[in-house]
Image (cartoon, rainbow, N blue to C red; front, side, top):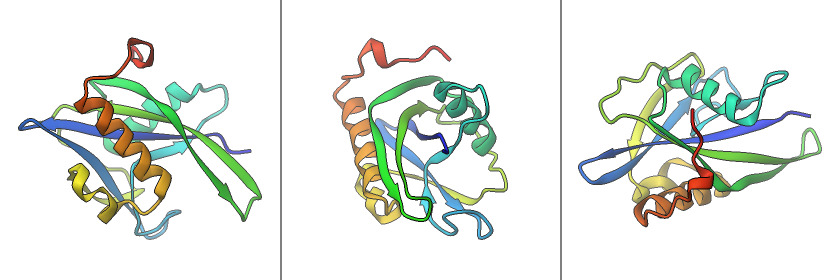
Length: 149
């Protein structure tokens, strides 16, 4: 069974929180869709290690803040007859960082919470981005969720 992670990258710019969305390349799974960073765990890799690796591979960046969102992405994949329970992470990226996309993506956008549903079409991913946003603006991230990267 595939073990997966989701990582929701954000930056703070002009007192606004913006989330990174990545457009999937035509020859990749979820072709043409706007998504967050995501991927599969490698052998003997923890979920946290996989999330940090995928962030680096897909964007060329390293988070300045990294925490677990206190929820999971759940969905049923009918082709493999699998119920996925996917840990969700949030990662703050410096607002001035220059992203370097790998071959999985063709474009990226920084979006505000008001336009999330214009880009992200998976309801659980929308829910998790909104949860991360709400936790950030209310300054409600608990110390237990923060991961020392």
